[in-house]
Image 1: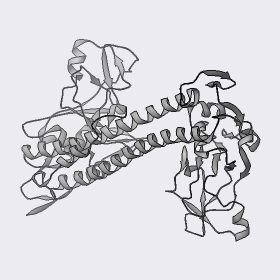
Image 2: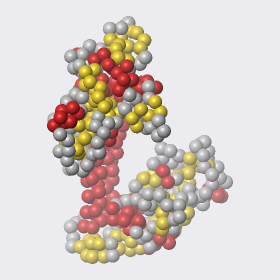
Image 3: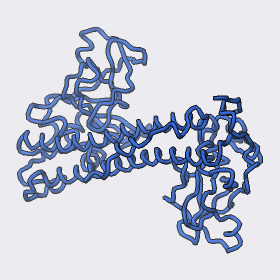
Image 4: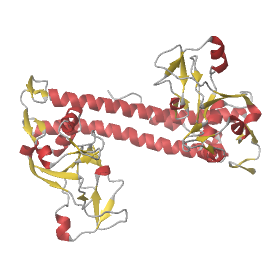
Length: 440
């Protein structure tokens, strides 16, 4: 295939190159007017742009006359270009595809294109393509606190266009993949909501629907006890303050970023070298609980993860507290409870504010934390099994979304450069692999 060089890379010889202004019917700045919580017409702002589409969530409104509305109204297929913002965000765009009468704010430019020559969705994907974004940012003038791209510079920006038919086909493929990404995100969000509801139900009603009793932490199943954390642990311990670095050394050291609700995230590790005798004091054993003892975000305080042996031979840092539990308690059950809304509120209520704006816990505070406890390990295991299943569902949607995002990024680049043509693609497998319904 014959190819030619452009400012955005090499493209097929038969694709056109032209300035955005060559096919632009309007490049118009928006309204300089303050939005309110109520009014006759929604006014779209920069935060209405979500992944290349216009979102109608968290809207503000304006009251304007019919003449102003006619001058600044959006039509389906208009592109909203983000002309001013931080240098990282300036230049992003989104397509308006809603059947509502809406206007737009002054830091946006409305691009109306000749749709006999250009598909607006294709152009929007092209503008948001990383290669085009890098070139657009070269046009930005830097102010005191933000960058700016004028409408005149935007109209001069050179782009490449395949035939209108191919533009529409490319846009259709990319929208399909992005739609699957959105679906996975929604399913993940629903799974998280279901988990929150399930956490609340399990820790207040139990597994068997038995009668409840009132306790210091609210209602719990009648056969359960509410105990102090001290009664279920063998010992508590602060971590090591040894200097750690990204350079791989003998021992990985778990820190605050590695503690996620219920689990250890081993993706960003630091390491240290210690003598065998010193390292033995902080060497983690499978089943150990790790509490975050200091944080600027109170909701993170007291979050605890169960160390399950990965990474191997790991130590823990001084901003964490290690708890080793008695055999009568499942550490996964304990971690799930303190990760619930009720558990988080109990920890927050006992936190000590510090002068630097952070919140702190100590071993005494952790020991005094209430814990609702089923009468035996079997019930704890049953609760953990249910919550583990929900976590696996959430993780599945996360993994699917990550794979789709990588696919989208690769497709966007190859389709925008013509390295791959739509007629070479087979995307039917995407539909077959998608879940057909949300978690029930």
